[in-house]
Length: 172
Ligand SMILES: C[S@@+](CC[C@H](N)C(=O)[O-])C[C@H]1O[C@@H](n2cnc3c(N)ncnc32)[C@H](O)[C@@H]1O
Image (tube, rainbow, N blue to C red; front, top):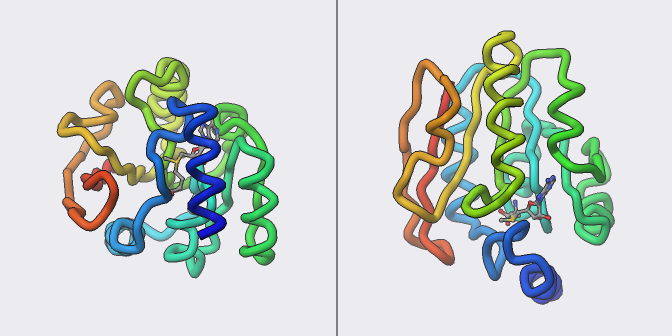
């Protein structure tokens, strides 16, 4: 309950950056985990880990967590002491990537100025062969990463038991 209240508080302060009123459901997190399991094994980076709702279900993959909010980071450090947690803007971390990675993206892209800087970075990493795959969820119907030149893209799952219901997209 405390996590939900903290999340709502953050949403009310910064709706564009948080994107939803409560953390993702376990059903969405499990759908994301299943999608990742079908992909090449590589270093996993979760950007926008929030209170760890998805992390909880993918922690066996030892993801690096990147989260911009200090308070969320403190919570993540407490709950996932074995994981590497970086309190930073995802854009800064993406610029530093020098090995093959898979990205789990939770940062909302709709009406978010972050997107205009994020897309070129993804295109650059993909062209250099460093971005192997990307898994993202979205509440809308449209392809959230249509500007990135992935060879393959698929809307793999629709999760009704999430507020709001969400689509999972997989790119590689
Ligand atoms: C929709 S919430 C998702 C939280 C969690 N992954 C979940 O599914 O419940 C988006 C998260 O992305 C974080 N975020 C937003 N912009 C960010 C950025 N530029 N770099 C890193 N994290 C960011 C927010 O603080 C928030 O925790």
